[in-house]
Image (tube, rainbow, N blue to C red; front, side, top):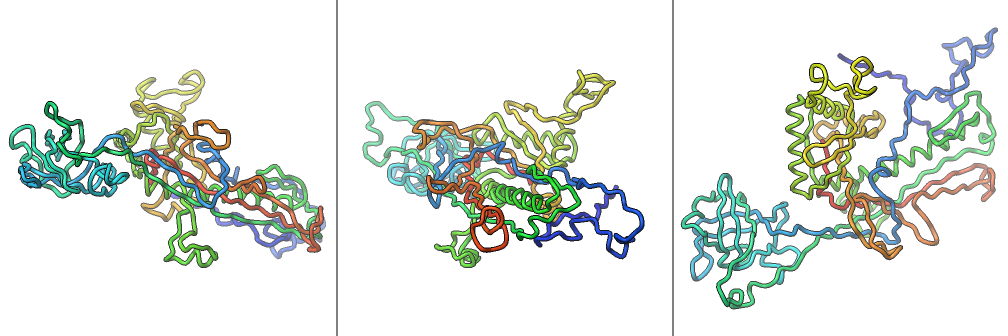
Length: 497
């Protein structure tokens, strides 16, 4: 079935500060009888609101918090994993010590794919692999698990002796295909570690991330003459402005659009690089200081991306969804999560859940009106539990509206966004303002503010209309915000593409 959208939708706001024929019904065109016709037309004064609520803001307000900042940059730290687990290559008979280790393991990265430096925590804190002499390790390649003792460490090469004879030979020597996990250590009686200081002590490590705010501006302008011009259409806006003065609606729409920009920029922005010369155009210094890290970029760089729940069929979608749960198990297992998805993904999830419910006639659940089959059938799900996880599902207007990401997704192909899964957990941090430890959502907006100037959403009026501030015969309503988004624990987020 093909659906053709209307082509005469007035979806683009006018940039001219005047009453235009595109904003009013015009009876003076050649296609009408003109204002000189004998009989007056029936006048419907109220402007029809054909697009419903046009704003998309509110997503960040639901899942995050807002906090003030006083600097040009915000820096935060995130803990590393507690246990030592590495990826690398096994050499079944590689000798790296004078005593002759039976085999060796060469580290390529940690379990999350981050490059690991030589040595252990005492000599290379923060990025060292942390494996030391006398550690007991598990080694795994497809279909094989081996227990071994570390007998020597030289940089990123670890000498091994298997606890069972010749079991290292069972491990596949595939490049980067072996996983190593430290499970303990073993020493003889009275042994002072390995008789030297080379074992060292492991220091806890952490990762530091940074983001910078961007300054966003917009304004609306109306001349002193037009400010008093009364139209015959009664207008209203999402912000509550109503009446017969067109500039009231135009200013309210400009403000609503700017409010949406505040959220869209926090979702979609990416950091700039000095090779693009964007910062040069903006006059920023140092180079590469343009842009900011938005939510989608942060998840793509430090979080999880999935194509799961594709709507193929209920059984396939359930398997895909279980794969998402398995990834969450690897990353921290925050039990409560919020899913903000587009329409097709929302329906696919509904179909998946409905097919799994065997209650009612023919396996169909009647979910409203006291589950009465004669009243109504509810196939929509706003919340559900799978395994040990609770999910709260909501439609994401930003991904559906054709004038926002919905239109971009039509041609974006594999880069189209179908949803995002946000953890509902929080982290314990020290609040410098009140001087106590507080609970903060993983996602929050930082805006520039001080005792002198609050730039969260700053608005001021200039000109000679109303309270005169200049000789300019206009009223200019200015809007400004300086903000950035902090995405803590991006490994617990999931982007659906």
